[in-house]
Amino acid sequence: MATAIAKVEVSCPECGHVQMESENFISTVCRKCSFYFKSPLVSASSKKKTHRATIPKRELTCADCGAVQMVAEEAQSSSCLECGRHLELGHRLIEGELLGNLSLEGELEIGPRGNFGGAKARAARILLKGRASGFLEAAEWLRVEGQAKMKLGAKGGELLISEGAVLEAGDTLAFQSAKIEGELRCEKLMVEGAVWIGPRARVVVEGIVFGEMTLESGGRLSGFGEVKAKFVEARKEPPIEEKISETSN
Amino acid sequence: MGLQIAGSVGLDHDGVIRAVVKGDIRSTSKLVIARESVVSGVVHARDIRLEGRVEGGVEATGQLWLVAGSVLRTRCVAKALQIDAGANFFGEFKVGE
Image (tube, rainbow over all chains, first blue to last red; front, side, top):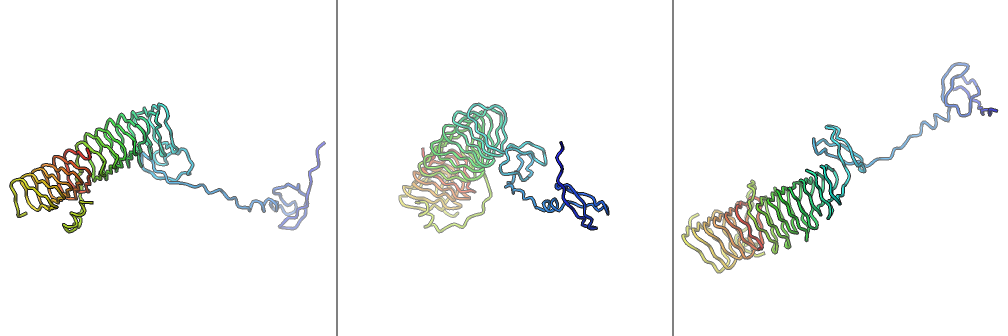
């Protein structure tokens, strides 16, 4: 047996005619004047504003075309709105052998037993503790810890070799700046800006090209070098007495 | 540059070279090779500040400082090294070895 639907009295907001409607009605038509009206309960609830949670976003630059877009901070991947390139945003840890190319907007870590065996890996930041058979490109920095080897070269923002770390590279390393506190052996080191070589560092290169260099007492450097010619405004020179005292510091 | 020296120069105090030297310079102390000075030989000293030009290389038992505008060729031996942007060096490094 069907249960009876509970009814309620509803009055038309236009003509005041009273009629019976289901208690859950959403809208109806006045049977006297044909005016269409909604249930007062529904219209009251529909006025409630829905508050969407604000998603924190960050700027993302496409590695291929350079287009800038906003993506959710926690997003793991996205596609460039301009060129359609797939952008992997997360971090990646290589603990074994990885073949194939990589392109990350996040951080790539190659562990002590890891080997990047692809042709090229690109990431914002690369932490190298193991080996890389392919070329590495670190937009922000490449930091070396432990005993690391590169079969090919690398390029990027800043090259950081931590104290106690050793990097052997078979080809050219090209960076914007370099801070070397450990040991570096490579064919050619090209640094557009400043090279800082710490007091416990050891650098053995066949060729080094740089903008400026500081080598702290205790640090070691051997190889063939060249300062890249660069226009620099003449500095105001201190008096000779000061120069002599400066050299003693 | 008015003064020209043909032959080697020896110094046992801090000194400033303002000359064209066609030979080596040896100092047991600190030495400044002033701007526009040209040394065609090798410069040996404890600490060296190079503002001018040295063609034969420098050997500093202490610190070597190449300021902007300086030119160094052939060889660079030192214990500690500072090369400013705008300095010109081309040659072999042997620093801290």
